[in-house]
Amino acid sequence: MPRSAEVSAGLLVYRRKPALQVLLAHPGGPFWAKKDEGAWSIPKGLVEPGNELLATARREFAEETGLSVSGKFIPLEPVRQKSGKTVHAFAVEADPDIGKFRSNEFELEWPPKSGRMQRFPEVDRVAWFGLDAAAKKMHAYQRPLLESLKKKLEHG
Image (cartoon, helix red, strand yellow):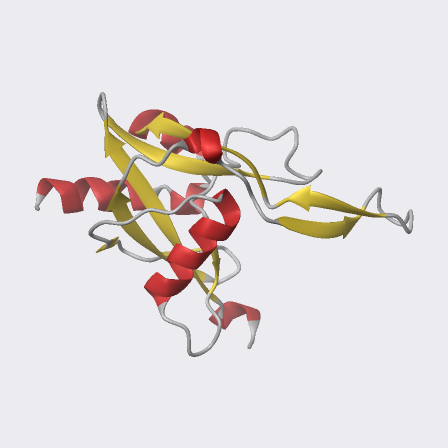
């Protein structure tokens, strides 16, 4: 499948205490270790051909956070990365215990060209953010998801 045709799906988990907050994930591994603003994301992953968007979003959330959520899943307007990949997101109101966060891992040669493989968490932490803070923390291409969430909540 060519890169421009790739599709990902993820969950934008939100809660309303004390005010509207969203749960974001910080990517693990050495490339992201010292990056903060503009580095956070919704937990998401690649949708394999034949898989459903929501099923993929729920699976990826569970794999990347070790948490599960349930409720009414609200489709948000898809966003597009610079690479051409489309990201579909579903909002769900939930308040999982982030103290139980744990992520799956990936393997990477580190340091580069060292021949030494190391394991890193796909996500190294999760946190709740108000919408203004979330907009600063998130990848720029995902920020429209916050507007889409606000519109969906305002209009029922």
